[in-house]
Amino acid sequence: MKLRTLVAVIVVVGVSHVVWANETYKFDPSNSTIGFSVHQFLGATHGKFTKFSGKIDIDREHPENSSVAAEIDVHSIDTRIRRRDDHLRSAEFFNVAKFPQITFKSRSVKRTGPQSGDILGDLTMHGVTRAITLHVKLLTPINDTRRTRWTATTEPITRRDFNLMFAPATEAVSGISQTAGINIEIEAKRAE
Image 1 (cartoon, rainbow, N blue to C red):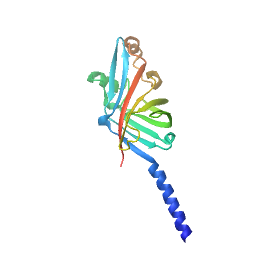
Image 2 (cartoon, rainbow, N blue to C red):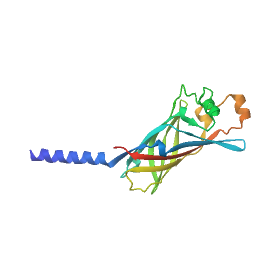
Image 3 (spheres, one colour):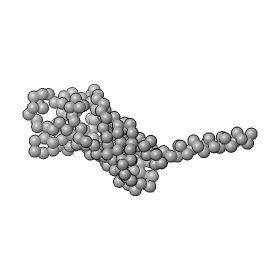
Image 4 (tube, one colour):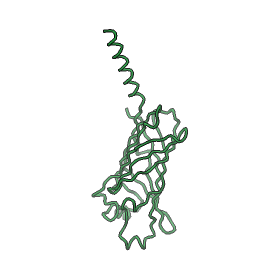
């Protein structure tokens, strides 16, 4: 009987350690930004998405076991020009009625420094999924377990890779770059 009790205690302690090893954080959209910039002729258009959610699971002992998932409401695109935003939501570009969300789901996490890493994941936009790598940097102290704040960059995203093209005549005269720069700053709060 005592052996069974000892085995049960070991199992409970072992399982509890696994549960406590991971920390889950949820994006705080009010203190976060998912933005982009696209060059056009001599200037650049800057925009952002105002509605998104996400979750970060952190394993501090084994960062490679950490993960990230995010979902962006494409309808929330905001370039500060309503007419342009409506056009970007239309069937000619994002086609929000058919593709209302952009998603990212990590495949692997690799630590590249004391407070930096690379997150390889699948970005799905406009019905197309492509692998991208987010280069992330932790901005909060590494021992802060109440919240976490990160910046993330990636190589520019090519619109053509996601079938985000205007009509050929528009593309020919618009001067809009084929690439979009991505700038992300996420603050996430510990889930309870």
